[in-house]
Image (cartoon, rainbow, N blue to C red; front, side, top):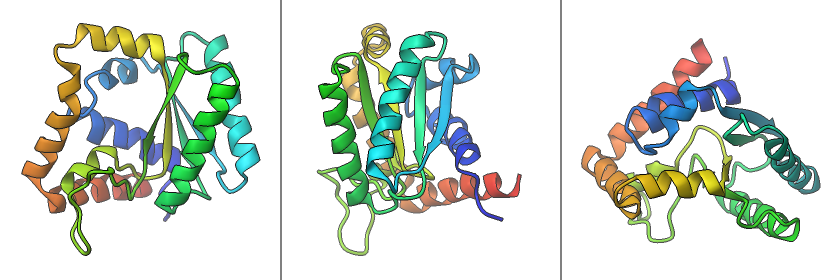
Length: 188
């Protein structure tokens, strides 16, 4: 049985992001059911970009929805292709007047940070902070993000803390847990 993208993404938020406190703001929105999940076909760039703008418009009209996870299947499996699509989406959001209103965060099964310590044949556990079962654009409200960060002591330390935690646990631990999330989703 194949993994269902939206189900796997919900489970990833709960059993990875929240369970390891990788985002200290996720639990409240998850529990309040204020996260919207939407699956998009990323194979057609024009349709994908239109859907991103439509989601910005949706959030404008639905203040009760705090954030959206856009699950990109198929068409963004390659990490560098995904980054190109992310760049196009960010540029379009700016041209449509959404700069400073919404922000796109990115997650991908093969995510690599620019300063990753990965080497050929060896992964960096820190990259798992942004690894998800499927390619994702996370559409965030800037005002909500700023308010949450203002209430959190030393928010600039969140990425450092997450990377240190995952490096301490190791690549095998990260891979095993993420595989379990995907496998549990496919057997549910």
